[in-house]
Image (tube, helix red, strand yellow):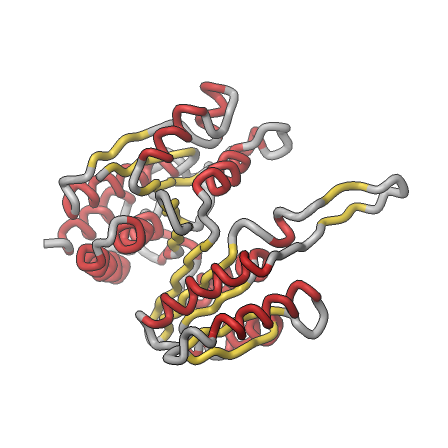
Length: 325
């Protein structure tokens, strides 16, 4: 099996190097191929997603991404983040999985990734008004709902569907389609939660949630809130998957160019993304659980500076590797 590695920008190459070591130890049969992506690709080719990189990702069994973004491109016409949006669209990954674990909290945000406000019509009218449009088709809602129900069957059997049905037409469609889909999953309990209530409960009682399913914008916000509640973005992993083809697995943190090259980046989120890759991308849940446990021990025994410790990227990675044996 083949994994396409996209180190990207900033600390991306450093955490990707840690991932390569761990994959070599856990899955030595995998073929790992690195390709240009993001700002690094713009600097060399002019495009954040060169054709050869896209072709390699389409051939791969899974894609592991380090980070994208460089300050010199923040206001540029061609930006590193455009490569990520293009890759998601090309691979058809519509479901973003964001686990959040800490103590008694063990929840999974399932975010619809390719519809809604970020992808709807937008523009500027002659009077200066600027608009963004949120649109959803019933098929888009049904497929993400089914993904959430299927995942809940492997967990504690509760789906919390988050919307704003008291205000938004798209949310009323969302609630109707999710309710209809739930009829095919009588073994899973469904609740509907307004997004403002969900945000409050994530802070006050995060342990009550199992699987949260929601649309793109709400999911973007709530998944970061869940990460903050359970340890911060330094521990936040993600998987973006579809029905066919390879998924994209990446840490949620940014490229952190201010600490790039200093050897102090926390690779935990990247290594937890590797665990998601093993489970959801390659169908290897056993090694995934082994890696998660090793990362948990390393967080306790050899934390990096952002977690209150002094371990370097290399030191944290060594602690994880020791925990795999």
